[in-house]
Amino acid sequence: MSKKVQIWSRAISGHTHHLEVTGDIVRRFVWTVDAEEVLTKKTADDRARLESKDHGSLLVIHSALGTPRRATYFEPGEDLAGMAGIGGLDLTPEPGSRAAAYERRVIDHPKRYALIETLGGAAGVLGGIVVAAVVAWIVARVSLPNIDIPLPNVPDLPDLPDLPLPDLPSIPWPSIPWPDLPDVQVPEWVKWVANHLKYIWPVILAFVLAQGEIKRRRKHAEASARAETAEVAAETAEMGDETRLSSPTTTDSAATTEDSAAKSADSADSDQRRGL
Image (cartoon, rainbow, N blue to C red):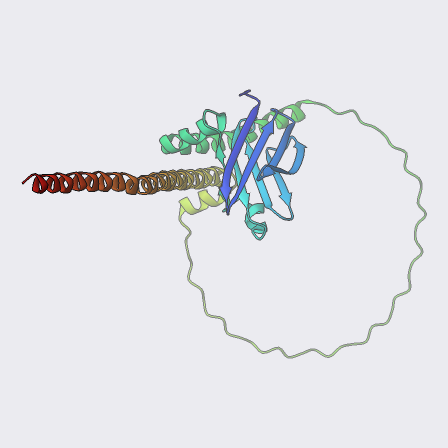
């Protein structure tokens, strides 16, 4: 299999869904259901959505570097879940593919995966701060030329007459005695978090998304294991049925042999009585 081709497949509700993705930057998606093509699409989006009126939709995710991550199927009524990227059923990547290797790494090393994703969120925050600081430093040291733009002379507007306004009666509003509120001192760590929240929340979000991805991968692995167990049990039951079907033939042969032996014994007894 070429490194630029990724295949996912899974049987869902009695239908076999098959997805083939070709390319690294601009990717070609071919989605088939029961060997019939549903749609073909080309896009460079790392979160590509494939939508079908009759067969639901697929959300195909790649990393920023173009590495395939997962393909998730959504029923026709799961529009909101599909837009949010939650729920759905993950398709199974082809064994030995990059997506299968990624899934195995997430399952085998969940703590390392969560740490890498969290550090990635922190690196994104620090990268934004560094870029903003560099841009500010460059702008502060670049002198822009003074450009005189001739503006047209606008005539002064004429004075408008004063309009006589009637004297309105004053409304006697009641005086409400408000109690003195206690002086609440906010802890310093709360102030620090509030001031730096815009830098903290991307890191927290990366950690939460990593935990959700770990749970999703484990759920998919458990479902695949159950499906394999059910398939093995079905094959074992089928082999047992074939064995039982072949058993009466052996029994009949043994019964026939016993009948022949009994007839031979009867014949020998008859010959012996005639001899006597």
